[in-house]
Length: 230
Image (cartoon, rainbow, N blue to C red; front, top):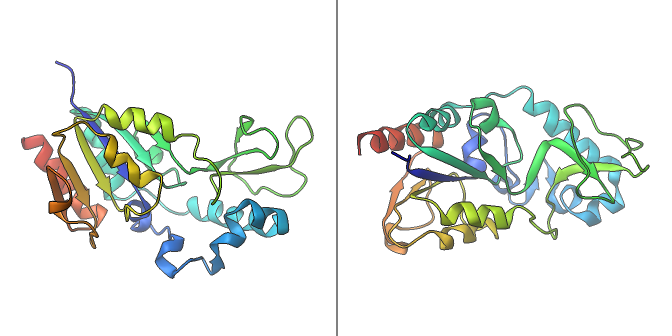
């Protein structure tokens, strides 16, 4: 029998308990920096060295953290369900936990791309500096979707979401667009589970919505136990 398809949308709250911060935790400051300085094409044009070093620090930090119980529980879910993870996060903790199907809406910290050819993408785990070039001599930049840029993985994410038998949303405010719009693409009657310690939606807002007001490390194992028994 074909496995039910669980589509999981994860945001910053998924990785927060592993020790990774998000700019939304600090009123528009990301590790002490205004987000537009370090997460916009304009910021990169003004001060590329600052932007590269900012992401170098994020990349170094990523080497020091591990997947948490929430990440590991989602990986275990593969034993009984077909799982697709769509994440707003740029870390690789889902992959480290063992989840094989992860789509990154906002890019990946462990990759870089050409400033002139967005399809020229390289795996990258060390520091990126000015003078690191693509094969045509163009500067490389973080493979991150900055404010004001298109989200190229949105269409594949919509297609995946439309095939969900169960939708699980973890650790996201559901106010970051276009990611927040994905909930509108599920089929009618599909159950939705929302895991967040401070949920900003109500069960009355959507049909078949269940809210689990807990952090990912507690809420995800609780939900998975429930799905296994259902």
